[in-house]
Image 1 (spheres, rainbow, N blue to C red):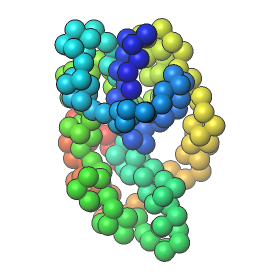
Image 2: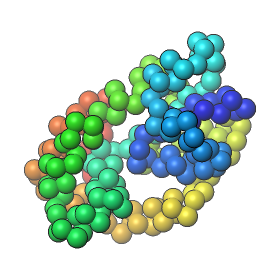
Image 3: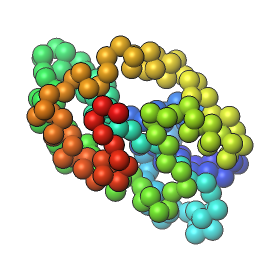
Length: 186
């Protein structure tokens, strides 16, 4: 998402709460740029615009984001109706070539981004971003964000894993885990 009035670019990594950020700016994705990478924006914009705009994104613990995908409405219905396990999901959907890990290289190059917020630190990080761009981004703007916050407290993502499934995610997201220092259970 790009906002020329406030001079920022938001790199929306799926399952990190980005839709509630976009809704606050009444962003609609008519141009199919919702999940553009920073490289996509770099190619699309002039060097001056790209360099002058504040660029930010959000990341999420790899084990947590995986459970978010597993519980997403589309997959959740399939899993619930067919009684499919997390292991089945990981082997049949998550390990597909265009799914899962390595957000570090798929979505942005850290040297070109100004701020990387963490889903786990959403309220504080959105406060920082709000101050930087001069617009108050509400971390609980949408009903979905509020509901997500409530549901997160019901069952922690670690309760879905066994050693095998934990290792599959660790291997798929190895670069992210190393670069951002994520650990299982944090």
